[in-house]
Image 1 (cartoon, rainbow, N blue to C red):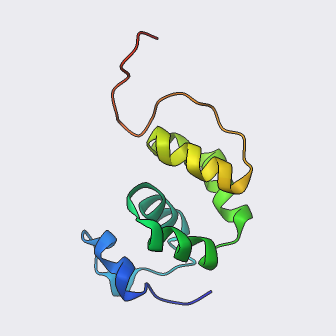
Image 2: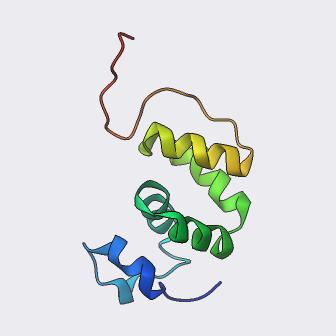
Image 3: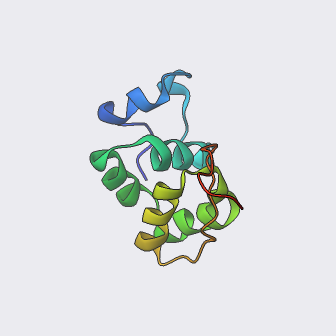
Length: 96
């Protein structure tokens, strides 16, 4: 696994010094940020950088932090069953 964020990913980490992000130590932070805000190139980078099992584990443990659309995409990509409740801080448009 490469040790630093590529240039095209760095803009996703505007709130920290991108040089301080360690891909191993900050794995959940990187996964969450790229999974929720990354474009197509960032998603491809994430799949090349982290094993599918690590992405699936993130979905199981923290997937409720992702917006529903992104959670559904990553669930499909990793063949991971996740609940389909709304999440990610977006409002429900239908009554529970």
